[in-house]
Amino acid sequence: MADPPLPADPTEAALFREDARALSASASREDIDRMKAAEELFALRHERKKRSSRVAVATQSVVGFVAIAGFFVNAYQSYLNKEQQQEQRRIDQDRWSKEFARASQADKYRAFFETSVLATDPSNADKRLVGYALLQEFVQDSNYTQKAILMLEESLAQELRSNTAEGLDEEHRAAVVAILTALSQTNDCKALEQAARTVDRIAHRHAQVRDVAETGEVMKVYVRRMLGRGADVCTSFKDFRAVRRPLRDTLLKSPELLDLRGQPTTTQANTRLAETLRDRCLDEIAVSGATECPDALRGYAELCGKADPKDLKEDGPGCELMKAAVAQLKPAAPPAAAASP
Image (tube, rainbow, N blue to C red):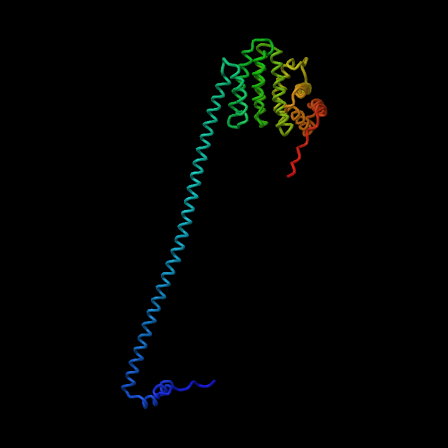
């Protein structure tokens, strides 16, 4: 590659070549001093520009860092604000949930108190019937099951004490059916077992007045409601037997309540209870299309299928007649097919 051409001016040419001898020959000392001063001035000016440039860069850098720091500060503050808002919402939600639960409990307690007033009205049988019907809801509520069962048990004893006719008159029959229907409305087999123990009230009543017609009617209602409900809601034969036990023990002590003679065996008592449930249910099915009796009969038969073989020594006859009753029922309707879009 060819060298660039030399300047025409001898001084410029000497400077270009950095030739001191040629420079001293072409320029006086005074010219050299002036060039030196000019070079120093250029160097100082260049240095000042460099300093100004560094300051500008530093200033810009600081401004950039401040902007970035501000962005992160704002982002962090937004995060804190969001967290605080979420925490406040959670606190408010908890407070309102507790307040709602407290108000609901207060309303439930007030409703239970008002229902109790209806169920214990001594002068108005219609109000008592309404109270018994409303107590079904509280029997199903685990927080009120014990209280509702106790109240219904006492109401049953009161209704029986106030019955002066032989057997049950219409008013007291309706009250007894309403009470036992309410007692049997729980979906908990254990609670139903407790409800079945209230049969002790009619046993005491029978021991006092020896009214077989009255107590026998109540006993049949017990069998229909407690045993029928147990067959529907209990999931094992063992639990079902626990519901049935108070009824069976009462029947063993007072066999005349369900037309047994002498001193029946446990197998005979179990079979008679099954017969009573079957007969009452078949009568209901014959006159009503809105009865849960088919479910009770099928449930009884299904529980028998889950029973331990040793249990069938006492329950075999009752299970057989229940299976025969189920065979007489119309088959359950299949679930309706979903409508095509």
